[in-house]
Length: 291
Image (cartoon, rainbow, N blue to C red; front, side, top):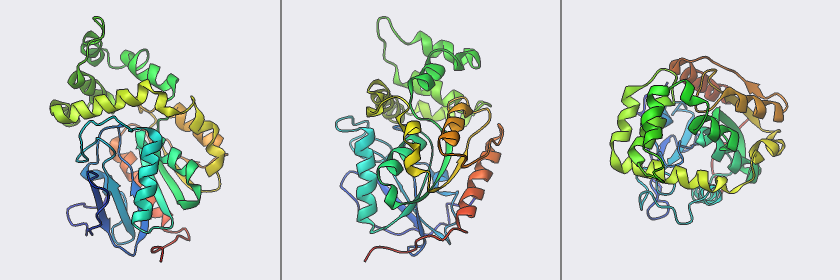
């Protein structure tokens, strides 16, 4: 992975209230890194997968997330307004085409954006496919993941209905505890931050309740729209939150794009993502901006 501390940055003011970060070289191949959640916000490691001497990286905190204001904001916060925000950012940066990089919720947003604005995508690098379909949500929040993490599920379950209790920190703790097969206690600490926990829980529930403003399995069914793009899928074989089955469904819908289950270790997944970005260097890509 590439060190983010010494990654060159450049400035470009976007819309008021939106927090965006630009790094790499301004003449590099444009790549946008989308963050998890919805509602999680960007983290330093998001930009460590792409070579700053080759790529021009863009990261931004989605509506109500991270440093974007107002925090935990729901009004007008939908999958399609986020897609519109990505497109507005592309136009603002005068980028003709870019690589779209994302995993988990980011893969949902990556697929939604690329299927709507295919002409502005060079290709996709996707980690852990999660499309917010009902089957995935029931597996993680009701029946499935609870059998692997019963000790973490019990306090989460206890804080729900009587009749409908709301505990943002406990909900965020449940998800933070299970996103890796080997519990990452440092990651769980994020849920101890009430501001982060509220934004994460509130925005995510908002998207789940509204079925991400699209029909179930829409992103899989409409994968044919991006079949011609260069796409690499990196699912974790034992990813609990993003079961490999969804990655397999997308892989088949794409007609057999590159798909590699890399096992349980996080460093193997990270290495596979770096390799994917390195492979994209060999493609004939667009460099530069619109005039």
